[in-house]
Image (tube, rainbow, N blue to C red; front, side):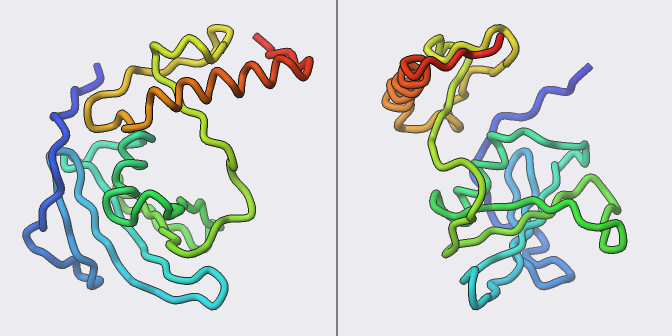
Length: 167
């Protein structure tokens, strides 16, 4: 049975405030985040390393939580990557996850269109194949109503081009 997560609260400095690798530690009701860096790269610009783990030490991968953490620490316009390295560079000692946040560089790959949904957004036909939960108060974007209208337009444009959504 899946354990219910505590209600999300704001991040505060952790105790201790620094990890052994020199990162600043922050905690909230669910996560511990260690922010390390600020590094400079001639092409990518400024970037940071972030180490994330649940406070209860269980595995994680709630995408919305990761997006909210990225926005909280690095801003809405930053890109945060998770890397699955070659085996010779593998670091896997606990249910802890490493991300790299790029502040000044837009990746040459990835999505270039914004498209979000929750369980109530019927404008996005999924054919029953996708499942999404409603947003809670911390995760719902301020622009959600406009995002829903945009999603409906994207689907209408897609359909007008004669595309068929596989169901």
